[in-house]
Image (tube, rainbow, N blue to C red; front, side, top):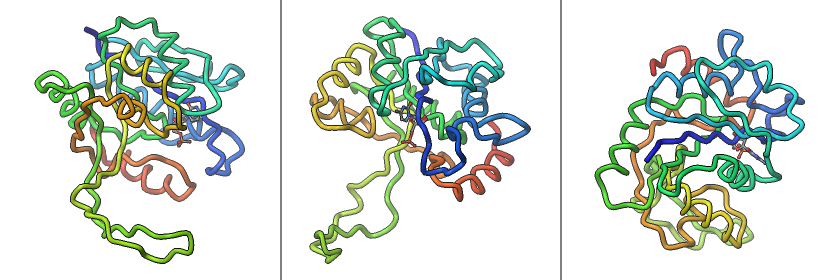
Length: 226
Ligand code: C5P
């Protein structure tokens, strides 16, 4: 089975307040965030196919320069999950191909983390795996008035990152059947009772959401190797 990288990049990125989608923010050496993410992952030589999902009216993708073969699918949806579902459909993957879904907005992804994910799906009896980090803060569950009701056992809590990897057919079915809105692929797979392992990610692998995130990402990108 193949390893396919699927990058949803069809968001608007409103919280960045830059007037255009954040994946096209110039991040490093005149390269946009999307180019940095894709080119770093092409350089890992792990994926058999690399695909990017953009919105139908995307005006920036044609100007991107990628350092390898990239399939562009102009079928983004209104939500991240819809973009992934549309992209997955357009891929025409084999049912047992492994699809690694990774946010365009996480340009600091490192090869070591991806290798840990690959080792997990290849050596363990799992339906999928996701990068995640343990929580270090103490966690409080509150009511509507911000009054604490209880403390959550943080040793059981992880912060989900991407990539998240599942087999193509299983992920397609899960996303089609997800009844509640899902913010990641694992949520949809969990609803199907899938066995999904949490694999150690990296603190550098942050998602650029707010303008202040760029400061960190810029300095990380300068220091990071693959
Ligand atoms: O907005 P957020 O940070 O959650 O987006 C995560 C990733 O999902 C980004 O790469 C964004 O471009 C993508 N996305 C998408 N289609 C949407 C919304 C977000 O591909 N409708």
